Length: 288
Image (tube, rainbow, N blue to C red; front, side):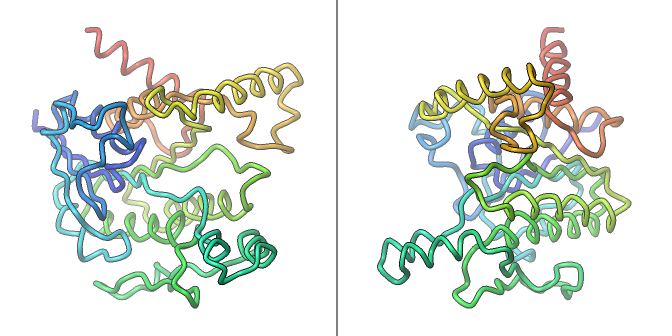
């Protein structure tokens, strides 16, 4: 059986690096694509030193907004993963530098709409994604939506069979609504426009790991909220969204992503319960 090849865009991130690790453990060829190449290991693990498995990954540099920089790496891939996204936009920088008042910064952050790129579905071959905000701001529309649609488009053109988009379970009251609507827009566009792709939309809640100690108390409160929400029949979900979604260990989600690639029956939305089931299957596979 030929070795699988997986390309992880955002492979040097918190979740992306763990997806790379899980794929390496199965003996797959793994390419990570990011602007900086290899991770700053202290930012994604508990050690500043590269782990042994990292030597089996090709840490490539490319720009997600410039498809020509990554398109050659997609050739003959079995799966492409989009594991890039932003939780907060950069409005706070203008506030901190004194260029914007706090009030204006908040208004801009929570505005109903912002520019992404030109319509990625109408983009000419080889054309870069062009930020539409006047100051070139990196927005939810640009990264969470348009870069994912473009990566799926390029994957389909290279006849990649499987495309995985790391989405999210829901939004939260502390984030602009556009955080989640742009992810849902990306899912809809990918599912509608690229029928040749087996599209998989991974929708986890909050991700935690002991290497990021600040995530542990957040996960504790999230788990408590999830338990309370379960006791009231899920009635809190419309009010607070992902704040009451069950938190998941980042390694567990990574295992689920790789197992979903392996299991040809998996497609469409993969929510928390299915994520846990896939990770359990992966764990049993590893015990054999």
